[in-house]
Image 1 (cartoon, rainbow, N blue to C red):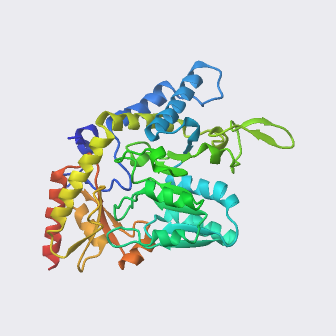
Image 2: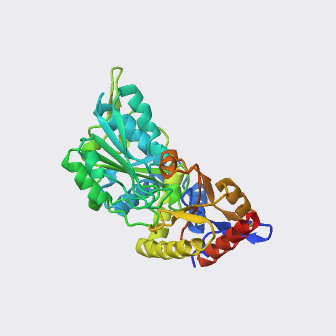
Length: 397
């Protein structure tokens, strides 16, 4: 129903076959409205933001700040709590090297889970090597359930950093419940929302977390744009790591005086064109309705899981979760071979460890094939995937 909004499906053919794009967890395709807005910006509004006392610069600044307001409304928070970054990974690193670096000391505990993306593991490991705090990982069942979270919280971690939706299992963590538990022991809660924001209603006040990070390119927006939400009371206490223009009130030979959040965290020339255009992605989501998107993805996920389970030797991981992310393996076949053969029919899936090697080890596999769904997919896409997988299985057996 929505495929017509995305020009890539008209423009991209392979061996006469239409594109079946099942890798939206990696990046979503862009609707025509977003593509048009980027062209429109460069043709009509291109000027550096904040600094010019002339109409063009003021118009560009207004568009940039409009996106901040749109994101704040989308998340139900204040605009001063929204910081633009390069993406989810950049946002997590920002938190690690500003907030966490000053909060943690040797012997402290940071709590992660086995389902985390490497972006929410490696920065903590690097900082731990420098400071000497400990890292523990909450175990995860094959169905995507956290095991013994309560017991790990008894060790009183200073920080819990957790994904909202697993990029492998598709499971949805109950962030509201987890935040309440963590805050009872004074633990800061950081949430990786990269796989949640495009198809779930995100109300930060209801979630109760202290930080929330995600990427625009995974919700139909431009690449190179990320969002970092942080509570005002926390951001006000953090000093910026990077210095430059526009983030200061004054500079003397001794030391600068910083502006308040969010400006003190956005030095230099920002990615103002793509940030400005991102508001049109939110407009697109709103035009459909996030609830309608959620219902559509759940229904399509249910259909896909049912069809995939009918394939001989295929095992679905986290199959009870209907968030559009479905990972599987097939007896005797490597995920790379499956993806390569599917590509011959212009079916795009992801294969490998999905930047989640700790989870792969916990599941007892080296790699999985993943299909991830969005509103431009439909049941015919699933049928083409299942037909091709059946042919692959029959060929090798």
